[in-house]
Image (tube, rainbow, N blue to C red; front, side, top):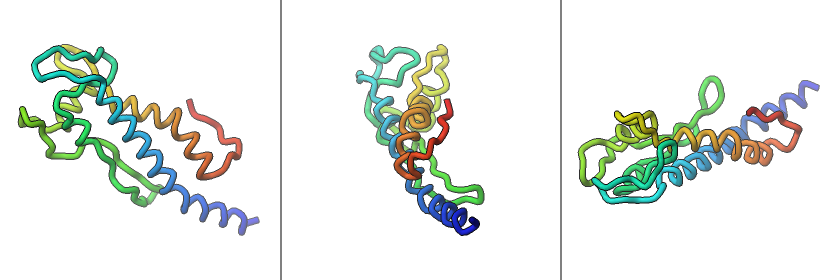
Length: 145
């Protein structure tokens, strides 16, 4: 019996970084899609509606979105998804990480244009069950909602 659990544990350790990498790729792809909700020139009204992802101006925000490689930690594995530091649009010195955070959390007028948090929600509710079933098998895993 212990040999079976050992084998399952080893398989889980081998599959986790692969599944986590695939999930990170799905979230990143969705975040880039969310951050491309139409486009407009700087200084003109945005076609994006509050509560949806932002519209593109120069594309810097989308280009700055990236993920780290999957790394092993004491508690398992981790990967980070977000804006790369130091990327600025051609018309400003404000880095995309700063204005991306403002768009995500809320502007001075209270308007929010979330792109990363909604992508994470998509990853957890839609992509993860499919990826985990492929990685670990369809063993009747309970779905968190």
